[in-house]
Amino acid sequence: RYQGVNKAFETTFGKSFEDVVGRSDFELFGQALHDRFVAQDRELLDAGEGRTFHEEMLVGGEIRHIESRKTPLRDASGNILGIVGLATDLTEHQRLRKQLEVSNARLTVALRAAQMGTWVWDSETDEMDLDAFERRLFGLSQGPGKAAMLAERAHPDDHKAVRWAVKRALQEGVAVDY
Image (cartoon, rainbow, N blue to C red; front, side, top):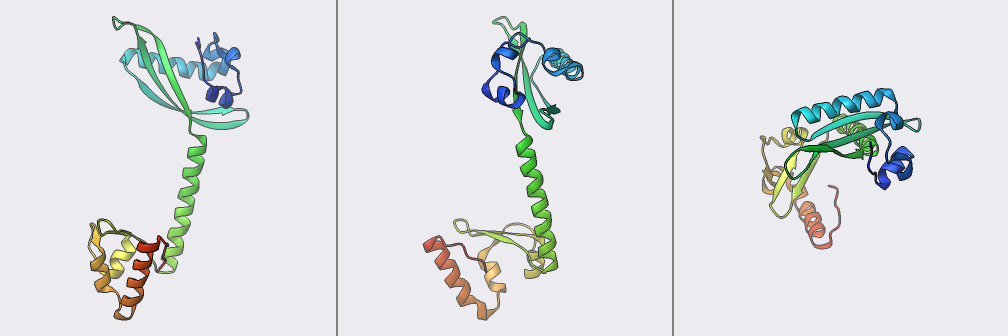
């Protein structure tokens, strides 16, 4: 039976503290989730240590992605008194991750079609991280590269413009696409 819940639980599941305290998983979530939670609790108690579980739950007509971390609650002698759990609703995180994956896939298609790549320069360490296309384009091997290695491969007509763009970016904090 639940001994307490926080505001996030109340918001996620649409149930008030008063509606939850003293109730069982069965009363709150129905038979199927109750059976799953009981199986998880048995696994946890048999192992005697905390576990993390990932759930998809239908809440308010929407599938929610929940990560729960459960651990045995012990007394001073080490005897298990019950189980303490922390659940995190990862639904928005999952949605954003999927959105990012789609966006990255689209970017990859566009870069390949344009025969372009990407690189990032750490001005403090002078290390450059180039994607596979940029490495091939500039004839560089795997591993971190240095800006000087890339500058050596640039066309001489571009050296002055690149130096100016880098100087401006470093002094003024202006992002430069080049």
